[in-house]
Length: 204
Image (cartoon, rainbow, N blue to C red; front, side, top):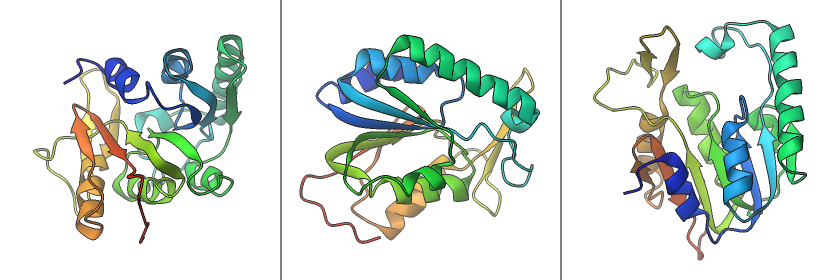
């Protein structure tokens, strides 16, 4: 097993050229890693940098102001433009962005946006259609199922320094697998990875 997220995706993506999508860019550190360590031709960084209601996005990252998020977006865009001209910022939500992407056109999709159960489940189901056969759908922050989950499928995780969030990634993966037996994802630490079979007929 790979020791780090970086080693994991260096290995998984080593032969995956083409178009990549990162859903949830935040400060852009993983964007830089992708463009510098994979054969990605174009990387679309999807993140709305938008203030949501607490009900929509109960996360410490959402305790801020729109002015701060506007400034954050400008800084990330500026920083990533210095890294590569292959990076394109898309200031959209996941569900807004997916509407502009052709089915089976993406080599790699990485989901690291709203980790609440219903959102991440919708993200996985929507973006798996966009991955081409042989491509990879992956994501971050797979929570332990040993944690108590509420009736909506979420575990509340608080860290010692204060940040918190609702996590339902693992529960969403389990439930999608129950609905679609062909969804043979793998978990590596806090990462999930699904490689789309070359001969595949989507039935969701």
